Length: 250
Image (cartoon, rainbow, N blue to C red; front, side, top):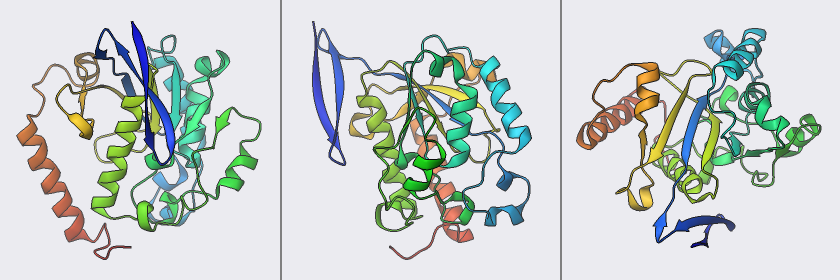
């Protein structure tokens, strides 16, 4: 017999579903947004919250054809930046036609504080997307401040990422799409599927599914936990040395 349990994040409530004493965690399909104008050249990174290019829109329609799980997806989530919202609207039309709405999740926003990675005021977004089924109730007025919880600081970014994973793990839905941002190694509109590690506890660690890995690269052996920690430390040192993250706490 199943029973719900509520847990809070930022005062919000979610259900975790228990079946015969076991927590049933969802599969999450992480999707990088389609090409935006900031992807065309370094100079375009000065554009505030850019939208998709015509090629980016075409990539979304191709994503809609290539994504194999439309019929089972029961939750759509997106970073509230314009490029991720439009990618979700254009790439996941079968889900929208079934009546699903998109939840805009501010914790899933980009990690830097340059103009192209800073979102728009929530009231502007509500007006721009007023004819589309997007729920902005989790997006607060300070989400674009790049200060405090929203600062471009390595430790704070890591905490936000953990909150996103915890939020996703606690959802009652079983097949979730999160359209967000990628960096090196992620092509525009690339998608990868993950499940939650059984022993990750409050960290809500994730593991890429075998089918996802085989779809994009083959059957190579995944990194061990030690290798993942070493890679994470090396990347963070590189970010700090390059000045990608500010050293001061905001």
